[in-house]
Length: 236
Image 1 (cartoon, helix red, strand yellow):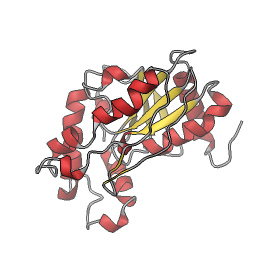
Image 2: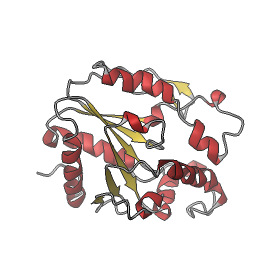
Image 3: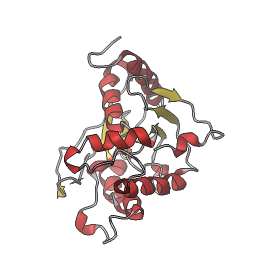
Image 4: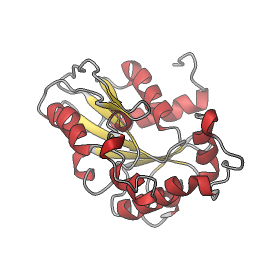
């Protein structure tokens, strides 16, 4: 089986990952968090998993991005430029639980977004109808934080070194580039770098179910987490 637009080796890895994800709580609804730093390739990976699902999963697979639940800028503290606020205040988790997690668990439709962080405006997407055994992939930053981790049935960490993720992240917003910002240690990257460091400290006790090393987009690696090898948790 091959799908147009999919790199052959990458597709094989994604099929294996999707097969394991689809085996989570068969016959009932399940939620899997797909976690990782900016620029690691979470959105692309989840989009490919959803595209493959009709051929591989044997159940409905839907996706929601935590970026659809940014806090309005007016509700963020004056210190929003700090690493601590980047980790603590970026997202409205109450809205996410009210519109996604609770209705999904209750067998109802979900609302996949509430606020667009780029435009700083509310959004009103159509609800998503979910089948009785639907698998929901939630993609975004900071998803293994202590206050969220009990909401997931499984988690997938997408990882790559900061030397890879930082240039990828900046390449998406060329109008915001500054000279030298491809270097992870550049002052322009401090907020994200230190915010991710704080997050990893908080998330260390919550080992992911699966790890995808997405350093090489053509040849990602599916890794079985090993608590004795914490370097996988320190990348990004």
